[in-house]
Image: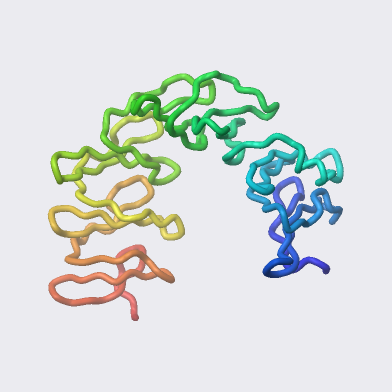
Length: 257
C-alpha cells in the first residue's frame, strides 16, 4: 500500500488517504475500488466526506467537490471560487461564509434556499440550527423558518439533543438546557457547566458549591454531590467526597487509580 494511512470509508466507499510526513504530508480521496478521485496533495486537507461530496481546504479557501464523476482535476482548485469558511452538509444544507463575515446556508446545488444572513450560525443537526441576528438568538429549520426564539444571555450547543442556556445576573451565571425545539427541559439551576464528553456521555455541573455529573440530555447521571470533580480521562474521573479523593467510572462506581 502506497498510502501512509487510509481512513475508514463512508457508506459509498469513499475514503480519505494520506502519505508523507512534515512538508511532504499530503491528503487525497479514493473510491471503493481504490481509484484516486482526488490525488493526494500537500496543498489541500480533506475536511469531510459526506455521501459523494467532499469538503476540502485548499490554500485559504474551502471547496465542495463532487466525487461521483470520476477523478477530479485538482489543477482547477486554484481557479475555483471558494468560501472563507464552510462546514459539511447536514440536513441537506451547508453553513458557509464569504468575505463579509456573514454566515448563510447553501443547498447541494450551491444555491441559497433562503436569503437571510447571520452574525453567527451553527451547522444543522436533526433539522435544527441556532442562528444569531442582531443578537437575537433563534432556532431555525432547514427552510429558514423560526422554530423558537431563545431569550437567554448565552446559548451554546451542548450535545446532539440539547443546547446549554445561560442567564447572567451580575457576576452570577445560571445554566440549564433546552431541547431542539427550544423548550426548557432542565431549569437554570447550575452555576457552572464543564465540557460535555461524548465518549462517556458525561459532563460536570456545579450546584451550590458542589459538583454532579450530567448525561447527554442534561439530566443528573451521578447524583452524588462531590466537593471536587475532574473530567474523565481513560474512562475515569477523580473526585473528592468527605475529604477523600478517589476515581469513579461514568456510572459513579469507585475504581482503582
